[in-house]
Image: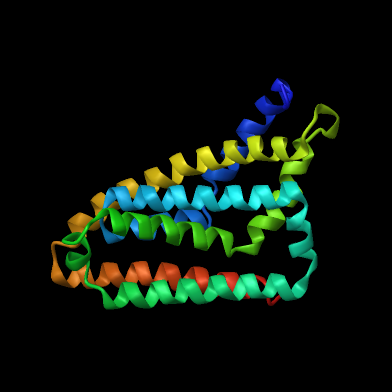
Length: 209
């Protein structure tokens, strides 16, 4: 086996603790859930996990270290993520929730998947975390380093998909109750938009310190 079973057993609870820690990904799924469709919220969670696998693959190939060491590339990725989150915030404010729920299609779920993946990929902190965390469990003597990165990344991605998906799933029920009131529907939109805007602010602030 490419990964030592005991090492994997030690990695799983560490990854679970990471998944349970509230962060940008969880807040993004919460905001998606508050906006409407449960399947779209789960799709957003799947997109985040897919984005995480992209980070893991880059790290395993050694490209993650190159990106982290190059301030110009690092900055471009960061500000793309900030701009995208701000765009999502504006779109949320301008689009009434009933309109969103009356037009739930496979396309909207694909869009949720795409949004989740872009938000994750455009967060350079994920690259830094993977480069700091995963190598502690990788043993080059056991074979493919990339293969081990992918296995550990899959563990993180699966746990994140389940936990973030559940957050978004249950947020839909809360959003549905609140959206029955026109005033609360408007408040709900602004809360969701504030989450997106707050994530954009935090992402920009973290990398200007």
